Image (cartoon, rainbow, N blue to C red; front, side):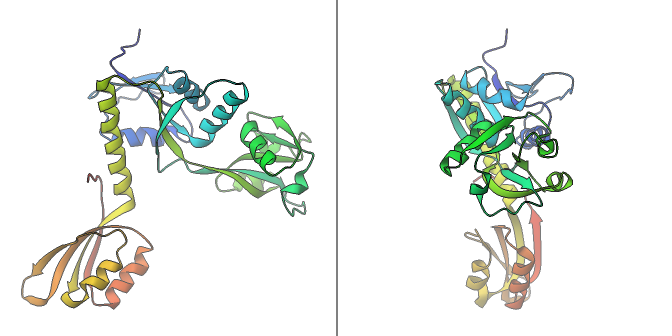
Length: 299
């Protein structure tokens, strides 16, 4: 029987979110000895068990209170939520945080030679998809009647095989659509990975561990979005230079040896078109500009 004192986290066993979820836990200081053949992994330095399962099993494990936390794509989470609501089942969970990986979009695609003017062109069409509930919600919102063809894999071959007139599938680069003679025409849902928690209250020790993980995840994401910047700045241009650095607050100002007209400025800033920003900084007199990555942050 599982140790109820250990925090149980469900994550995808394999696939696009698996490696990124593992990397996030590592960045948060959770030491795990991964074995690809084992479905349960144990943290060495924290009371955490990782259940490695199919991605579409994770929402149900959270809804039913079998595990404490889950890392899952928002598209899979919402598809399962809609399915349960359609079956008049209760859905309860807490969405703790949207993560900065796993980005994708759920899109409608049609034959590349089709003259497409809008979603109304798909009225009464047969649409193949692995996401029937998200598709149904969108088409109902557009007041477009259609017929759904449920496929759990290789959805993009449906039009060529004569199974459907169009498809609704996940798209990243669009290369798979192009290879199968299709073109993307509507984005119906945008998704990222997210961290969810079961609705029922956790024991105080587990909740404290969840709060610690959330703080660390926030630090990891802030670090990924920020840079540590060091530069030499003319004293009379400090206000202009600070304004060019998005998210910069209270920069550290240090005197320079043998130069009373300039100071050294150290600041944490969000990176935003930074080559252009560096050129603007140089144009108003900044010099010796260094931009460094940040591994971890905690405010």
